[in-house]
Structures are given as structure tokens and as C-alpha cells.
Length: 246
Figure 1 (cartoon, rainbow, N blue to C red):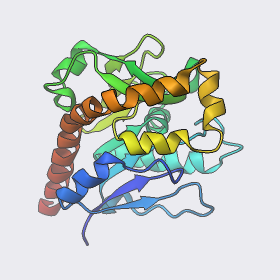
Figure 2: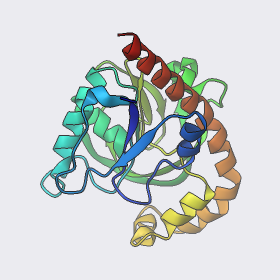
Figure 3: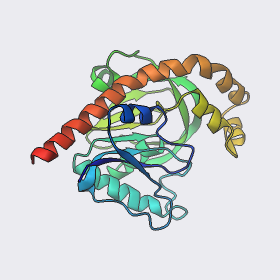
Figure 4: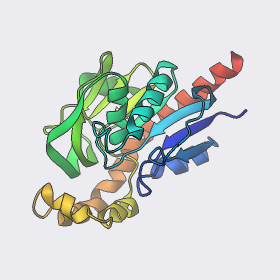
């Protein structure tokens, strides 16, 4: 049976973005699974070549409102312990942190729009950030944060959110920010119901600022994503080769 990359997609407009074309170019099979649907069936962890967990508007701690979250982070824990190459983005990173025993909670302030993060000493050495700037511009859209999981390495921070990126083990990365978005995807997010209200809560004039900055910042985000995508692809290939030999 061919191994696949499973992608948890919590809302329709938060898909793989630019990562989709990279996976397709590499000939790596993936499929979406929406865990918010009642009775969503998770495949066996042994069938996975990799796991990607996308964002969403729910809080990891809102288990009464979103009971699927417990099943999702339990599955994620099994995948992580099994060494499955994993990439979590925004909510995905928060779910990874929770699966690894860390606390997830509301941040002191919402981060929405373009902002700079700073790589840590570990981040500067990590292959997922190789060759990139030490203080890259990234796209943010979150109100929650998390404690660093035990055994994880902090790779990036920002003034408003200490844990922006981490690596756990050798093949699991969690990013609080978004690298997968491009200009059309950001425009689509801005047009989602309730988006303007949420953006306004992050600061007056924020929506216009996002629209003004996106054409200038998005190309750099694409360049920032390349070594991360390279790293994930290499890890998937190594993982599946190891399983085939086993």
C-alpha cells in the first residue's frame, strides 16, 4: 500500500496553499481529512508517510465546544511518537504542543498581519531555516499561544509571542505563523465572514495595512518557505524508505 501524507484541514479556506504545489511537484501523495466532521475516521498511523496539521479558528482548550480536538491530539501524539514527519501550522502547532503535554492558552494580544520574528541560536542552525534571514517577515493570524513542549527546541520568537517555531525530535516542526499563504490566499482570508471584525480587534487600520503590505511581503514568505519544504520532503522520503526496508 502506498503511504500518504495526511493533511488535517479544519476549515475550507485554510488548505496547504503553496505547499500543495511543492508536494505535487515531488510526486508525493496527500489527502485532506476534516476532523471537525462527525465521526471523522483517522487512518492507521502506520499508513502515513507524513502528517500536516493546518490552522483553524477554534482554541485547543475548547473541547466542550469542539469535542473532536481530543481525538485529534491523541492521534497526533501517536504519530509523533511513531516518528512520522509532522508539520503543524498555527492551530496545528498548538495541537502538536498539546499532544506533547504542553499548555495552550490565549495570548496576551492577537497577532494578525505581517510582522517580524527572530530566529534563536537553534533556529539559525536548523536546516528548515537554512540560508534565510535571521529576522524574517511572516504572516500571522492567531490569538492563542502555547508553552514549549518538553524536549522541544525553540527556533523563533517575536515580541508578542515567545514560541513562534519549534522542533521536536528530528522530524516534527510547529509554526505559530503561516508560511503557506500567498497573495490570493490572504485576500480570500480577508473576505471570510467575520474576518473584518477579528482584524479590527487587533488594531485600527490593520486590514488596510495587510492589503498594502501583502504584495511586498508575500514573495519573501515564499523564499522563507523553501528550506522548510525541502526539509519536510526529505524527511518524508527518508521515513518511507526506512519503512520499506523494514
